[in-house]
Amino acid sequence: MLNCAVLMGRLTADPVLKTTASGKEVCRFGIAVDRSGTERKADFINIVAWDSGARFVTTYFSKGSMIAVQGAIQTSTYQTQKGEKRTAFEVVAKELSFCGGKSGDNPSTASGPPSLSGTAGEEAAKEQTGYYSNATAADFEDITDDEDLPF
Image (cartoon, rainbow, N blue to C red; front, top):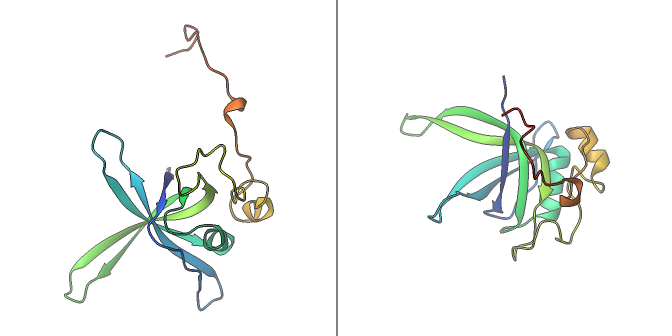
């Protein structure tokens, strides 16, 4: 089975770091993700980050910041005060990274600290999500002849 969500969007509010009764740090925040197509519409997705991911988000991001999130979708059910049953969806973040500045900077040229999964957060990333390095456009080459591909 596979449960993987990869999103890129802008924070809808300033993130706030909280601590649970058991001492774990948590940050819940929302991101607006543009839909593709001709109409300008967005989906608003709830994200939860724990421990080093929560500290990373609250340290480096604010309302309007572009962020990339990789994680898993989680659902929970609850009952409203009127007794109606509701289902909530959120993405539990496993990897978080910068995508550009508020002014729409190009992600490859954006200034600021690297992502949690990059060099500055390397130890935290290894601890929380496993290590990987960020690729750049120079790491890939264009395929000009696709006759040898099996599909």
